[in-house]
Length: 382
Image (cartoon, rainbow, N blue to C red; front, side, top):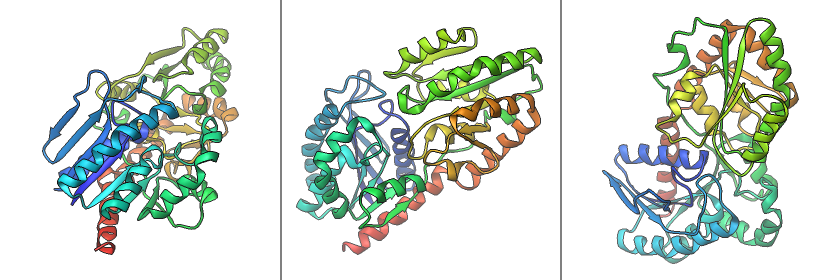
């Protein structure tokens, strides 16, 4: 197959959705398919890159930040990417277009199908579904008819969790929403493969964009009590925060006001090559997000053999099965204490995380599901 993928985010730009795209594109190309990605350029990246069957076109837009962008910046990507995708389709004649995500890339899939009969599949990320992000509420009200038209014309709509499927159906229920989860691969540097006999120090970890929706502000005030109780028992608890974003300053002030400077460290945005040292050095992964699609950061933490404490956001139903806890943010303190005190339980849950990644959530399994879907769509359009 010749696969065209359009996305306004691709590593190092973006978050979990961009990471999913990177892994899927790699799997597609390694399976023998020709893959072309049209995405955004960022300082330090090549504007064109070719690796075997994978080609990446990075377009210069007005995007200012790696980890987040405004609706205006999304529209600038759409304006730049549409003519490039059009030109590439004329030159290459792709078999299918995968759209990451409905907004802002959906109109490109819609246009290519209308002009060239190129089938397209939309992979939702969460923020592209009306009702997911409060900051886009007014905008989505205005463009709702256009979104419905794009979804209706699509050959398939894919969510990565049951929760995201429900959110999409709340907006438009006239079309089936398929579920294909995100993936991960078991990492050799997993916590369970390391010597973890020293139980006097327990490292908590959070990895994600620092925005209000991720919910760190809900659990930071709980940490002083947790740290005090653990200290009385001879245990030192720390929290590593990996990521950056517009909410960082607020979180830093919260850490100061709760006298946590010696226990909480902000490490900033890290590259994919740098992340393993944080996952492999951690003992418990925290994810207090309020809304998600299916969080890649949780899957990555699972791939390193970490037990998970997360809120009941989208994706939690699928991801947590004997490998951690799904609780409200207010209950994080109690669950952290449980895992700090019980090293045996931590290890057992971490091993279960690895089993789930290996047996259920491998990238190979995820990519195979998409490739099978693409083949079905192409056959229907012949």
